[in-house]
Length: 173
Image 1: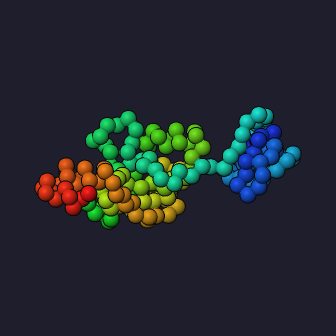
Image 2: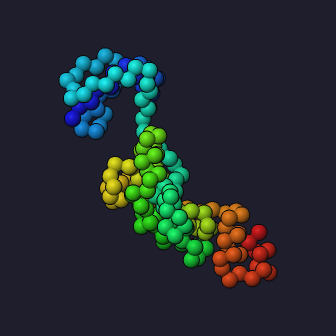
């Protein structure tokens, strides 16, 4: 299927913005330019509208802290140990998270999903592209980094969620 967007304000990655056309064929950008003349299944005049490349969210918890489901379904933190480097975010990722639809509507097409910050070493992240409802088909790179965090949240976790005694608090500060 070919779709031709006409008269858009286009912001390409490798050149200056311009007013022009965008041809999509089978879900992929085929051509970008001024006054594209091509046979298309659908021609859409987008005068006054803007076309941008897909946005990349470089630090996201989408799919592991699902929206609207409550804490019992949150898989972003593995609070069993201060070091959970072996944990993979893709094992907890939920591709039906309602936030994914909203992210796509806002132009976010690719994300670096990382575990939460409860542990000093939280686990392995992954880079995903929202092109499927099957996690394995979304993966661009995995593992893609190791989530590490130091600060107030981790201190509170260590004191409240483990067997550290109050005298150990000084070690954590």
